Length: 271
Ligand code: AMP
Image (cartoon, rainbow, N blue to C red; front, side, top):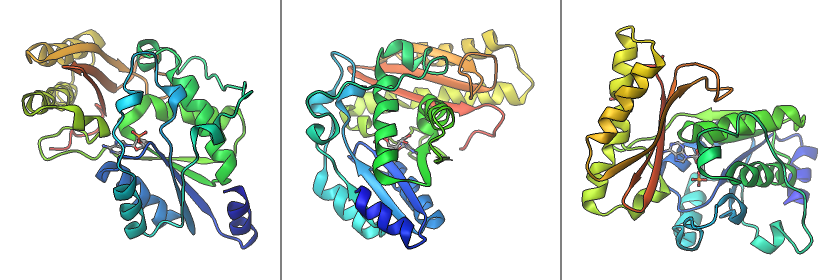
């Protein structure tokens, strides 16, 4: 991968990277399309990164669709698909991890200890392997965006982090590889995440700024759904994930499936 990337840079081409864990859907493909518009060469990495899963999570049953992924990426016209094995990425003796403090500590970081350490480590390795000039991440994983921006800036990685809007189903549910776990009743219930964010955005639009009141709106909608169990509902600053701001986030368990979603309340809610 590095040899190919060096060749591209030597020829004066810019390189865009789209990191994924495969099981590709229209959300991933929106990142790929933007990368193709903004770069001469586009690499999509497909790697189910074991070190970002915490104990008891769904690593073993994480959805995989390798042939379908490749045909989607071929049709999109990407220049390379980087698919390292676990042993390629973490050979025996590998013992360096990247830890981002502060922004990675709360919410997903608290609920999934070690998750962002795994993300920051693999992302730093993918940036190094691909020599990417730009890397594309989804707003769907807002805290991941904040962590990766911090990482790129703090370690002077020279990669521009590009953030792409969340792609949603017609009823508002954010596309996610994990939606495949939902049975029909759970799938219906899952709309409560986007509904909660929509109602909070409406309240914000009417002038509501009290974080406790906005959190209560999020919580009330999730609590009203019998199949949903709230993990957290927060409104924070999108860069620090700790100081007050306008980014509303929810994490919800629907049966055995954990779903996350977010929306910047300053923006009109789509739909
Ligand atoms: P994943 O394969 O789940 O690790 O996701 C790879 C990238 O796709 C991440 O940057 C995600 O934020 C992004 N992504 C996942 N779902 C969506 C979505 N519904 N809309 C936009 N981007 C997404």
